[in-house]
Image (cartoon, rainbow, N blue to C red):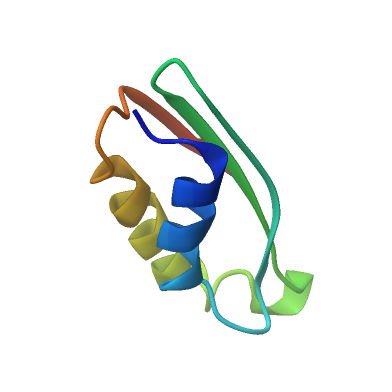
Length: 68
């Protein structure tokens, strides 16, 4: 089962400036992560969000995943 620190560690390898991890919840196979990006760069940073989601989906015990 993945805990909050495991999730943050996985995101640290993917989420780079100017984005940042705002919040993480990891409980009973559910992982929720909120990433903050400058509005004007959101579209350009979409591949990073997708990579973050893929990194989280690969963590052991993750059954449901939500990123925003």
